[in-house]
Length: 469
Image 1 (cartoon, helix red, strand yellow):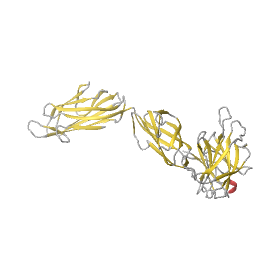
Image 2: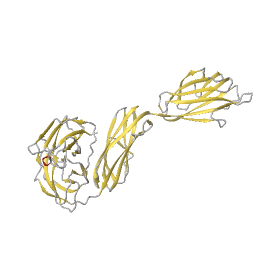
Image 3: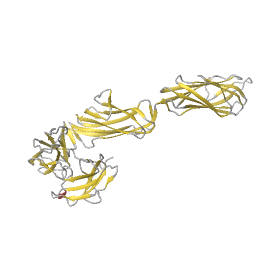
Image 4: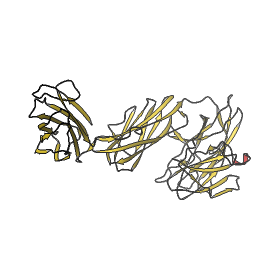
């Protein structure tokens, strides 16, 4: 709400000139409430006049001119005597007598019927004195609602290679108190990426090279919506993905949570030279998980050490009527091909065995796969948590892999931490995280690429399960 004062003379109060000729004063205050106001709700103008002139004033006339889209409802007096003379626009009220130091307070109740900023003018004059006409202007914002909209987003945290594809998951929440409609989620990003797809909202105005706006629709108080935007990185350098939310014709009561920024580094191919020196002949089924597994031995054949190893798989297809073959332990996609990353540092000449997991809906192995191995940026997975889940079973399998089982909420995502000591002084996060298919999850530690080393090659290994926020 804004108040504008236009005085006949340059003073902060109203001047009166009675016949005696000495300057006299009257103080006026006015306010509109609530501001902003929801359309069709009651908008009240509270006005107070105090006579500081030293004499009694008579026949004070208050002329209240409403905006054209605002309807008069009623008037009421808080202090003193005020009479309603005219209830149409303009609304006219009369104060017959106001003694020296006396105060009159009253309220005009209205109903706004149009959105936007509405101006209310209050004119005050007295008939028994040479009173300059005084105008007070109250400007109120009329909205569809008052809501605290908030946005949160997650995206890739690890350094990406040019050509990598990443999905940003964005959550929009209405914290109330009113419903919010026509919510727009704007996503801004640099010139170093192209949009592949989006979900969860209709595209507004078409995607540009640096912006994608999505219409979220309407959210009731405490309701949330989840959206996603998939990009492919095209240029090396720092990359920012900024998501912001607003609702047209709504007042947001908290601007702090209206935007969120995700930053990631993008680089060209790294210089390490890697080679696949042996491949298990064909994927074999793991009867514990139902997945097909295939082991590869990868060697650093270059002259420099590498911090991690990436394995990209080519040749996966859709042999099932509706479901494609997938690399189950993939952590990303580059140019449409899935890849896994083993968080293993290799000196020149060193090698590592990685176990790839595949989901083949036909339940038949497929041997027509090729594997590309390159140096990967060093992996450092976050360990933020929205809670934990107790591990109900830990068992060493005949293969010396370790199986853990934990209760879960279907559809929730979990991160498995592992450590060489029970205190978890330097925990590491297994990758990828796990989406629970049911109320219990079985997860097998088969070494790289899930973990940095096979559990049989370390003196001890302890596990914890965290719920991903």
